[in-house]
Length: 159
Image (cartoon, rainbow, N blue to C red; front, side):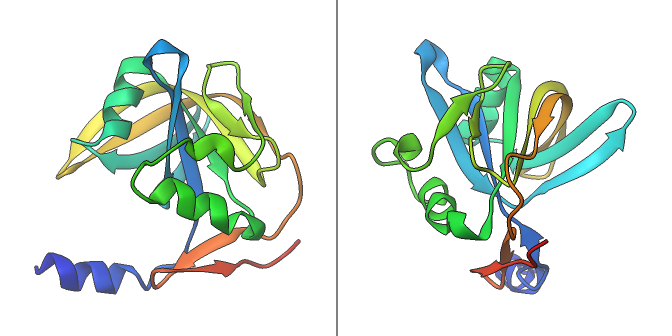
């Protein structure tokens, strides 16, 4: 299967947009935009994310053992873009960020967030599937979600 063609095909699947965050060594923080996030189980409370195995995010989550998933609202397009672009400057300068119990950053006005400890990691091709055991969660505000479809952001349905 040609990877570029497969990427075009998979771009037709609409998904929510999240920013995955994790503490960095020395008290810093790291984050990236993703759309590969899902609920796995309620008992125990598990979620999963998929990140590039050789990437910075995977290494930092492995080192810290924790991560948070911030579900973006349709008005968070700038945050989504900022965390998806190559790192330059302080990505956390946009938005109001707080520190969750694990030490990961959570967006104060996210549609929702979950704070997790790493429960397991599974290699999957060039990515790693990371299971997170949810430690805390919140729904700071009701808002239409930010949706990613065909390489563009869209506003989801408002509640």
